[in-house]
Length: 430
Image (cartoon, rainbow, N blue to C red):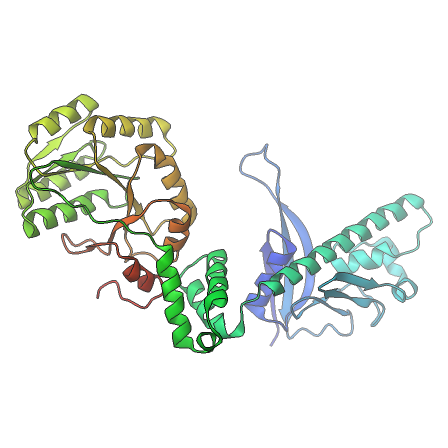
């Protein structure tokens, strides 16, 4: 059965990797071309992409030569070249070598008037004898461009081979990728595993998995949970963007501290942008029998804390702020300064992309967060983004939440538990 598909990527190597991943090493490249994609902002330079059309079960022997372009994927030039008219390009660790000794004698005459944008077409067109010197120069430049592209492809292949995943560790690598761990993070972990594991561990899947779990655990830094001290007031604020679960997390913490531990505590909310959030927290406060204050400015914050004097713990629920709104972030900073907070927990939802998580953490840096609370683990497709986050954000994790139920679906962060969750060795609901 014939299977023909088109793949697009930012560069040739990435496109070839897509072909290998989707269609395997028997795929034949039928067509390649460079395209440009317009930006939304008209003054920005158009983005260049590479498009590859590849097929399985396609009979191209009578009209093209096969060229191995890397790791077993074959390319077919479909420009009417006689069989054996061009010796294939060979990609090796030293680069790319081309043999055009026969091509210059055997190219079909009709190619003089038609230039094919594919690599094979470019090569054959560039080698046509021309009477006009200017086109000859142009063709020579095109040939040089192709040579550079193929050399680059050869270098990429060499680098990739140097960074190959050992066969005995490949199953562990795929487990990391399946867990939504970014490729560079997964490769780094496998590299550490290869470096530290003994030959016996490398050949024992269970031993290798245990070592990998230990490596992942070593990457995750956790802080102590909130620990109130009787007779000494502690003020703790939760900050973050809208929709990450701050109010529900506050309710879970308050219910546990009040009902389970008997802590004397109160609530303060500055989330006056969303009336529903204020009413939600007020409902929880009434059920748990907690005093609650609503503030809208720094002076009101100071007054509210004075009225709650004598309590051991104050939890502050802040309004969701856009990380791109500098004015809102500065307003938040002023409120926290007036509250003289002891701890600031930045709440991040693991349903967000790694890029979004990192951007939020950076923008909320002015809030002087002391730790992270990771929410909605139950809604995330995979927990691999947790590793990318902890490697790039220098904050420990204090709590994680695993659902909407108050007060149950929250737990103090433990590196061993999170490592097993990332690797799919534990259930969220154990």
